[in-house]
Length: 367
Image 1: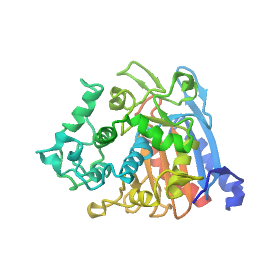
Image 2: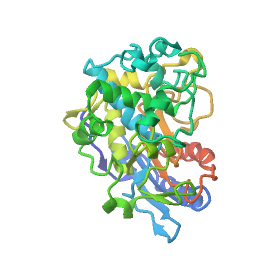
Image 3: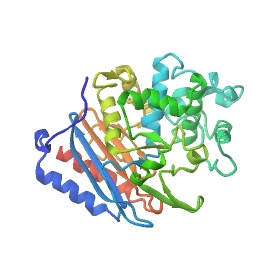
């Protein structure tokens, strides 16, 4: 498939103006309740049918109006949009295989219970590595990577699902050791350059920060975070990590999502093979309850999910701690990108958890 995103009139994809208006009203009702501001973008059959900004990109020390092209700290969307794609490209090139032992690259795993960790275990959060550790306290730079590698297992590999940032830090290290290239360079080579992305990056330069949504007023760093990664461990790593650190806007996230919906190609360019996309977006952990592919949440269980209840069981997506999310429904040919700064100025507001499935249900019913 060679579909590229294009704008269109919502009525051409069978959306009623009243339903579009209802989406806008629902989003506006959440401003300064669920989040200070947001950008919502909806793609149907390759056409951008909705793209609006709401509220404020920053409240303190002054209010700034949200723009449709505002950049956001994507937090854990980094796992899906960067790490999973990089790993699958390395699989395609024959540099690694999903079922090989991680210890073939991470020598430190040898002669221990970690020797049974396969690369797919890391991608599916079934490696046994802990969910999160405050590694930034007392560590920085490569010390964070070493601490992740040396972390104690909380279970046998493949035994249970434990969502793990540390596993994705290890995946970044695997990619760098195999290629001899930095993770940032690999991301640019595999994703940014072929898709011609201009606003998707780690560590946004200072000239872009006027259009980056603010996140937390961070007590640890003693300042309001704007254009600086929110996640503490990613910050201690220098802003580039396999689990967090990526910044982008709604349109460019939608381009990556459309590439996946196209089974790996965008326009005339093939980013991934069709087989890679199918492998990434199938449920790898159905034997322990299901719901996760290679870097992506899969909407094929009866458990509560941010996708809502109306997306198909084929839908895949991910959320980020800062209030970001992307969902792709192949059956409905639908992409929903919802970017918010819900952690601004504090991470204490968790209403986004209830809001996401409701807005997704409304969108599915509208298109």
